[in-house]
Image (cartoon, rainbow, N blue to C red; front, side, top):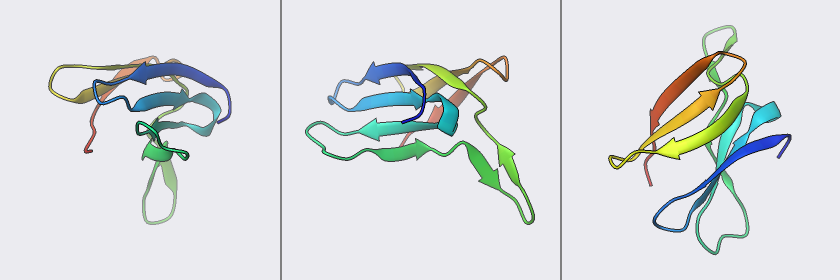
Length: 84
């Protein structure tokens, strides 16, 4: 992690962290020793990478499983659906 900001623990015990300077969201399932990238901060196009997250700060889920990420440098709140 590089400059983690937000953290959220879901009903299954998975821990989500907004990894600010790496422009991504990480997840550690309950009892896991390693995390995985849930949202990569960029999208690969044919010849360049476009940022999806600039500086993720805060995280929250709604009751439908949508993840909301406050992206401070982009001045946006972004919505994602996360598969388990």
